[in-house]
Length: 213
Image 1 (cartoon, rainbow, N blue to C red):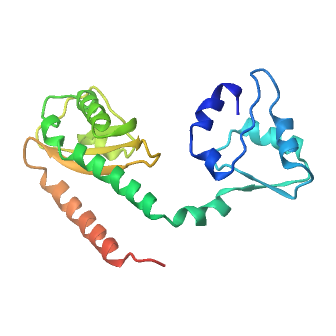
Image 2 (image 1 turned 60 degrees about the vertical axis):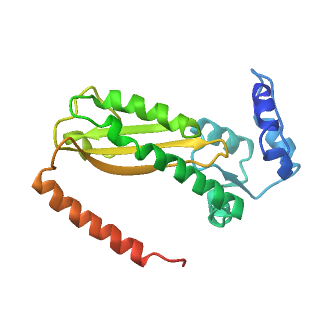
Image 3 (image 1 turned 180 degrees about the horizontal axis):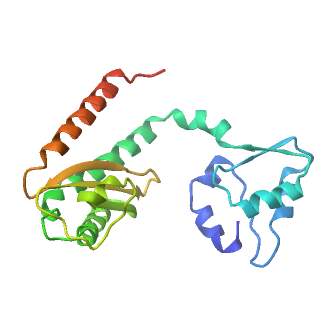
């Protein structure tokens, strides 16, 4: 990592796990540090699923005989199993975002814009204990048809369905992510209620069926 980032890495849980941190000054080539760290020929290297293409290509040039594989194929099974502390951290993140959704009635009012509501939500996410706000989607009326709409200056109408998808990162590093659908200031259109009932029944069926394995 860049030398500039080393203090943050040393303050993270990584050193306690035995991970060795190697840094490089700005303007220097970091890739020879990889071969030095490996200490010899390797048959395969694991890459992050979302590594930058320039990094992947540089490592391929540096290690032409090594097969490049996704590290997630190894790490996924480890991440599936949670310790008691991890389960508690996940529960804390879920409870924190639930407290934000519990206040939605204060903000989702006809005439207010999605952007205005999103600003209130972002402040509440931090107040609920999140270290950062990762995303706030407030999608009203026709905008609710786009799963990753974001926000707009469009005012929320009376009786419009509003999809609110929000989340943040807790100090533990675990993240919350919760999507709920609301209706603002009046009864929802009958057609929407019919569609929602079908979706809700499908969700109930999934919850009833899911189990380990």
